[in-house]
Image 1 (cartoon, rainbow, N blue to C red):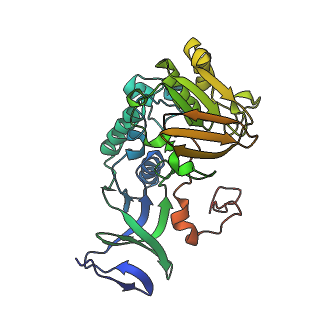
Image 2: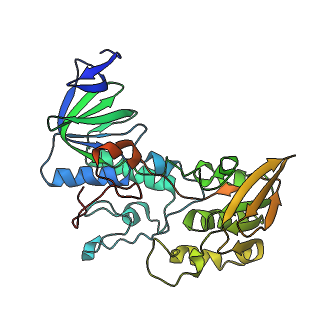
Image 3: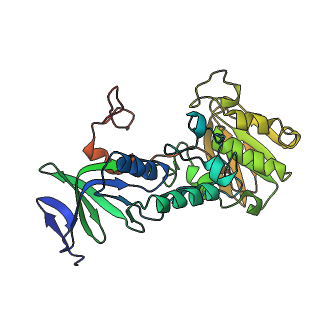
Length: 318
């Protein structure tokens, strides 16, 4: 193999290798989507495929804060024809295999690893994809080890490893919740949390249970939404935990309060809101502003919407 970068079939910046491999399908990302699609391909009779991940199976779930659990419950209902909400394949139930209703990220990562091993899914772990291009109807997936060629590429790299660190002046001074290993390790007794959807509420729940004082800000008010749309309203799992006396005692919510800026001077973080309120804390604010996603790395292969996401048809096809 050679690491020299040169043009392959007219595609700039691809790595030449005598060991280039050809597949019918390449799946990028070995999380829930990637493993689930791999199983679906096996069921459809497709065998010449590979799942590529820059880390390992379920790595994003393994990176969750230790205390964070799935908001969707698992229940072993496959026997009556209803899928477990956290299932990724027919006949597979995290509840049945783990005996846990709301698994942690680490537990679910282990679950995915077990499934991948059981189905003997073809994996290329610790293999980073540098870029993807298409030439003469064939996708060229450029990795450090060479070129992987395929007629089809399924992008399932997810979003957790790509946090949104923007949104207001000084956002880079904050710590994104996805970088927290465990909330019990955070030093200090007074925290400012920016973002009141699932990640922000989850952080507030765990810190308030440790008797920390929380002030949480959101430009909207997800906890006040009366809708069944899970992209707008909080989960019942979060609502139940917000009823905990420790949450009510230690957490103050600021709905419809957009953050304008965060500054850090003389060891104090100062948060200013769009309506000119000012709050301070000696502890680094926690940012729960969501994720930018990985689709940006393959945007050149899609027709894109104005909001930066791929255009799909009525069948969810790109």
